[in-house]
Length: 321
Image (tube, rainbow, N blue to C red; front, side):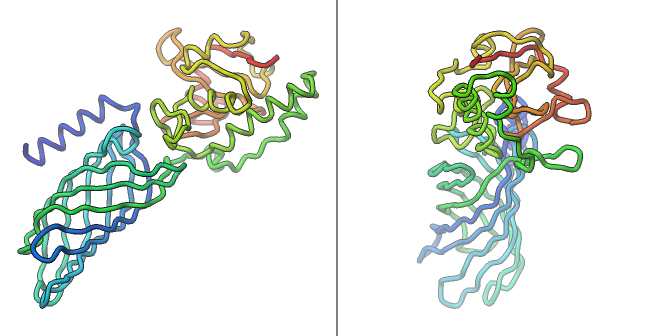
């Protein structure tokens, strides 16, 4: 398959699997190029950027030190298109190329394509460790072949604030949730429990969206996984899916003035079928995991993200009365 056909195939796959977004991050890769004799090392510093759906872009600075007598190092930059970088079980597929300048005996411009796979090894919050296999073909003799590498880095979803203030980064700090609930007539024990549910969810701010993610080593959450996680940590079992959570507890009228922290907000992007859920945290805000990760949004027309969900808000469920 030609590079052009492979890129078109990746784009088609990306558009058809939009619930698995790519992610942003910064990574350092140490590798060995299994070409010639002896093998040679490689170093790459990569900035990752989400594009559309699960398709992302890697932009890297590269060094291939020359370890053979009389040969120089190669310096350059590369670009890779990736797919499935946001999935927790699928390998990341990438294809791209690099160009640069060699030193000493290799004092000339070099370039060449590469492609390969990246497998997750460590997922701990935003920290990622991966194993990578890459096939290179360069215009410098003796440098073609398989490169194996270990990568460590930091990954996060791109975040967008509202009104010049990035609440998704945790800059908004709620007043004591339990105190507000007591003032609303909720008994002390239940007020403290709900306060702990809200605090647990807010601690996950900035985690990436992961389809099927429940925080159990996946490094991220989907919408219902986040709410299930927050309630489960306090010993309250909820259904796994957004449809199931739309039937949990009791129904509350769909009115911002009637909401209390801990309420589950349900949303529909397809008629009456619930497709998304969020956890109300007070002061018109709810926390949820959507395409840009775990973030806060406001049920208000002047919040670009919140406006989208406000217009698709279909119900409220209260789990703890």
